[in-house]
Each structure stands twice: as C-alpha cells, then as structure tokens.
Length: 143
Image (cartoon, rainbow, N blue to C red; front, side):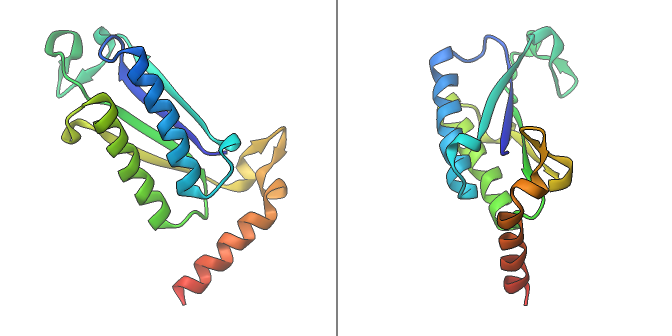
C-alpha cells in the first residue's frame, strides 16, 4: 500500500539520478514500514518549468529547485515511523539529486484502511491482522 510521489521540475535532474532516487526510496519505504518491498510504489511526477511556481516566481524564470513529495500510508502507523520517513525521503532527495535541504518539502496522507483497496478488496479486511497488531503496539506504547 505505501505510495510515494515525488514532484520535480522537468529537465532539472538527469534520468540516472532520478532512477537511483526511485530505487533508494523504495528500499527506505519498505524498511521504514517493515513491509515487503513488493507492496511499495514510488514514482516521480515531472512538471513543466512554466507550470511550477516557487516563492511567487515561475521556475522557468528563476531556475529554483524545490522538490515536493507526499506519501500515502494506512492510518495506524506510528508517529515515529511517519516522521522518520519524512526525514529519510528528504535525506535521499538532498543526497541523490543534490538539492539544498531547505528547498525540499514533504507531507503524509494517512488513509483509513476501510478506504483503501488492494485488488478490489478493502485493506481493512485483507490486512486485518497487521492493522490490529499495530493498534495493540500503539496502545502498549501509550500506556
């Protein structure tokens, strides 16, 4: 279920670096959530420099680099796991694409398991045991 989308300006980064970023983010996502890598989806959406604005200026005019990423996870993942992923994806974008850290933004989109589909079935049914184990762990840690 984990899905990561990284938004970049078209033409600012070569394909080899972007490919490396995709692979390394996939591994980081699987490790960070302790899930099989075959569940992970990572992709880049590229935007025309004339259609990307940073600080009120079109990137085509300013040349600014300002990657943005967002990732989807099922509700119930710990705050610590989510914040570690925010930091790790930022680290990877900074390192692989050589973008100034201060220009990178990211966010999390939590989705209720009953609102997510895997092969047409609600994740709340297909991943019921995993979801319950996370709930129990969170309750134990909160106690």
